[in-house]
View 1 (cartoon, rainbow, N blue to C red):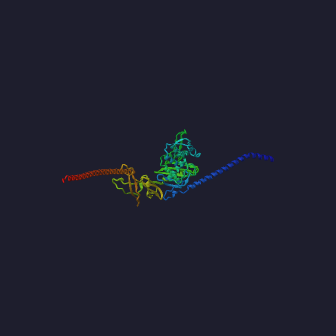
View 2: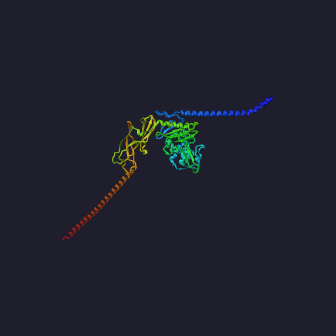
View 3: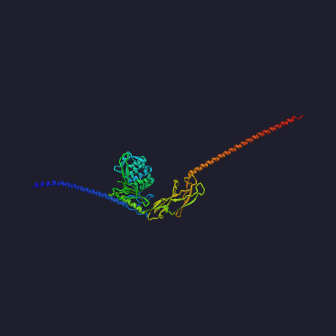
Length: 527
């Protein structure tokens, strides 16, 4: 009986054991999955805490007195600049150093546009096409393939093609290293101080970094080229078959405020005219956006934005908030039309009439295109000004600059320029010869500027040559006259000498004759 019982238990155990093993296996899976889920949740919670910490980070521009309060955003560093004046409207740690990722390519495009024609042909080298990181952005350009500079710029700015950054660099400077030197020199020229570039595409490197403000300065310079605006603001583009590829290459702008993504049009904004995206695991999301609203051009740069699971959040929502903030809280004010405290009066200069230095006296005016940016609630008279005279050595018509601040915050500047005179006294005139000293009055204070001297070099040269020729001619005539006089005197003296000699000879002969006659007369006397 006991044996049968044990046998039955053995049979039941044999039947149930596989189920027990399977159960234990699934239990382990559940435990592992639970741990994984817990780990993921912990990581996501940590990211969310980091996002919230960045979101609540101090906004520097909000501390400016009577300045519109800017919105909180998820970017760790951000800036909004009005491009025509350089006025900073929003500042969230804009000088913080970060990795730029692919927004580096704005600098690459700027230098290429400065030094190359769009129709030049680039032949891509092995290094240009094979030195980029595997899996990074590319249009698949191969060694020996030929693209124009324009096609390469489209690939660079729309598809963020890294090999095209290399190709443009090699074509422009001869090598990538030489191009990097040009990038850093250009950045310094633009006033960037928190940057250092080591490649033309922005792939990760510890020595490749910049700041939001520096990127705004670089973008401001790039906007001087209409080709940059046209190319970076294009939604779609295609490259025809090349010497290495028989297929058409289709490209689409990655900036979701310019082109929709998989039918998602939530972020499209028809005021956005240019921009560039960037992302690496180290840099996180970086974004440059340029929009025109209300007669103003806004440059928005956001850096180190931690992405979420939802595409475009919060990188594009941040930018939209900043654009709305800028366009709704600020206005552009023309200086020439509003400046009433600035009086320009002519002082003592050269008199009128027919004079070598021209007949009319000069006058000055404020450049009609110069403006400043002010909060909507502010009046033009609320801005303070500082007058700075221009460097005479530049040879410019600009006499001085007026720099404006609002509550000690720079809001723009205007140039005081010398008006071009209509009347010219000489056919040689390129620029009038002028010495003018004017009194410039700001409110109740009178400032006497330096003398401005504009010299017509050609006129001076011609005048000197004419004077020298006249002097030489005069000396020649004098010499000729003197020589003539000398020759006349010489002849006269010679003739006098001859006459004197003849007379002397005649007188001495007569004396001899008289003596002879006297002797003869004496001899004839008859003694």
